[in-house]
Length: 195
Image (cartoon, rainbow, N blue to C red; front, side, top):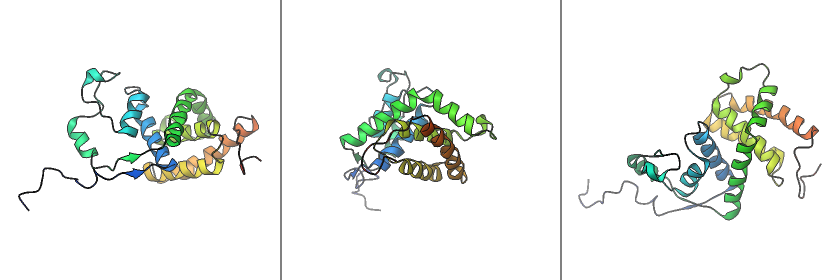
């Protein structure tokens, strides 16, 4: 190994950036919702950490009084390529997170109702979070087609949850969507989105 190599394990990735997308923003929303499910980390702290890579080292700087990450964990995460977000993607993420938090009880009841043959406590937590994300997006993002929401959430389930999560989530969401549409709670506007 050359002796003049600086102590920088990932020199290229720190200098490059990638452009954010709605798909990537949705993935970050999932990460934020998963980080905040226990209530130990606030959505604001998690948002700044996940979207803007603002790390909390000192518990005094944290609104919850805890560190989000230790310095050695941040060093590992710095290998990730920073993301350049546009305002629409940030606004989308903030809107969906807010809707998820505000509609948590309602979406939980919908999931329980339409997962009748399942013990709610035995459903994978990521599956629950993904279904809550879907309900929030369906109800609060009038410009996103229903099929896009379903497909994106199923893709996230395949990537982050169990092998059978995509099929399970698809079945539950179909029933939830039918109920929400019947009750007039999904309103889509724009070209090609109105029935």
